[in-house]
Image (tube, rainbow, N blue to C red; front, side):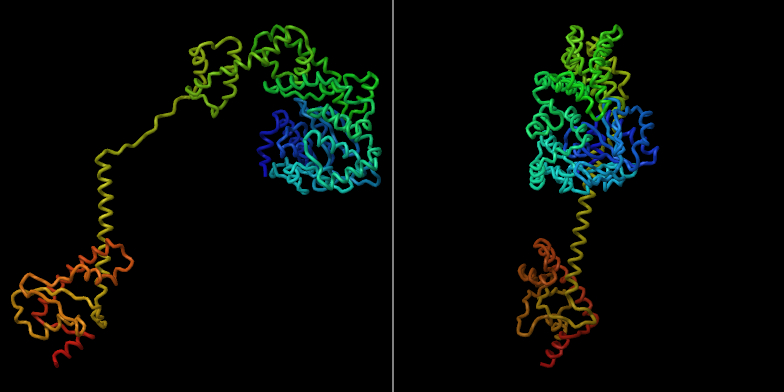
Amino acid sequence: MPDYIYLLENRLSTDQQNAVRHLREAAREAGMILFLTGDAVRDLTSGHSVRELEVTVHGNAFKLKKTIEKLGGVVWGEEELTHSLYLCFPGTVRVDVVSAHRVEYPKPGQPVVHAANIQDDLRRRDFTVNSMAISLNEGSFGLLMDPLNGAADIEARTLRLVSNYGFYDDPSLLIRATRFRARLGWELDHKTATRYANAKEEDVIQLLSAQARSRELEQIGHEDDGLKVMRALEEEGWLKILFPAWTSAKADEERLKALHEQAVELLLQGVHADMSAAQMQLLTAKLSAKDLAALKKLMLRPGFVEEWNSLDQLAAGFAKVLLAKENQTPSSSYKLFTSYDPEAVLWLGFTSQDKAVRERYNLFLKTWPEVRQRLPHALMQEMRITPELAGYKEIVHSVFLEMIDGRLTSSEEIRAFLDPHSPPAPPPKETVKRTRAKRGEAKAKERSYDDDEEMDGDQDDDEDLDDLGADDDEEEIDLKIVLPVEDLGPGDDELDDDELDLTASGLDEGEPAPRGSGKAGKSNVLPDKERVSASTPAKAGKTAKKEAKAAVKAAAKPAAKEEAKGKAKLSAPTPVKGKTAAKSTSAKKH
């Protein structure tokens, strides 16, 4: 789903954003809520250019008229039936302010209008792609309302009727469907196409209302390619219903192409001209004066007709200002091109044959754009003048104006001009460097920490081995482990037979006792394989390396323990418990 706050802030032109801001201010002052509706929402969602705005308000839109005029809006027309205002804001931004309403059709082409809320207003519209709204109110700004799932039809590039009887209730929808197909390249969905064919066959277009006729006639001039739309309407037979004398043959096709090229060139230089009036002048170029006058009377917005009639006057006014002495410098001329009425700039550039005027247009459209390509962006980057800097665009524009005036021809001059705008260099970053000795100490600490962990692991292993032995208060368990016998040195011969039996009591009956040399300083040590197998019950799941370490320690530890026990036995006999005691008693009896 698109981010409509982003689209409102980036897809609308500056003049359109200003118009929306003024409308929000007027509605807030009147205590009304308002929504962006119609073609503008569809074009924002689909990615097409937004040609005109439609705003729907809860309440009577006529109450906003005085406030809007104070804010710079010009009323081009009014519609009493729907309480709608047709406005034009600076920059030729066309805005329709419509009161939210619903419509009933007792008879085809004869609407009965009732005040309603925004939800009902969206459900009375022509196609689902035009039945969406974006909130312009505080607290919900940018929120999309799409009760008929128009966004899905936009994605599918499909025109689907809101009402099954739309073509019969409002025959102008037949003309609108043809116009949308020609402009957008979208197709009617299957059911809508069937209803279109049925309505066309039944000739319901004859019930077209006068209001709808005026709207559709004027709309041809507001299309991006009016001649293409005219031909589509002509092919369907709708143009002869709108105005029989007007056909595509009455248009000046070659000059229309030149007008479009001129508009594109100006657009590339930042001049956004609405070519509706100029296009309408060429679409009717071959109409008779009588037919042309009759056509102008049928237009929906009288203000649009006034602009159409004043094209030559606007162009003459711009030519006079452009050639004035105070605007002879290139920078002054450039400012004039980008600040004057864009429709006047378009029409003068298209129609004027004056040599001086053509020379100025050639400078604006051909020469000065090449100077813009030579702007010192690398030097500005070096001087820390980047797009993130406040006022960056103004600085770039001032450099451009100086360059087209013939100044700032060398890098030294450019640097001197930019120096007041260059921000101070940031302080150097503080980097803390550790000495080699400290790094060595850190590594030594890490190794010491690893060794401590390894020693802790070894102690845990020792404890595991100690746990294999029986507790003093518990029954001794025979694990069939042969413990090494340490020579006790002098005084061995003084041990009696009972004490010797204690040494071998850990062996099972019938198992031969380990053999020792009996000499001082020697002990019976288990072979490597037997030591590993003896430690296995306590070391299950350990790695092979730790098992080997544990086995070696297990072999050395009992020897020390036996030595201590032997010394203790010389002084006092050790009591025997459990199975070991029983075996010793049995041995004495035998």
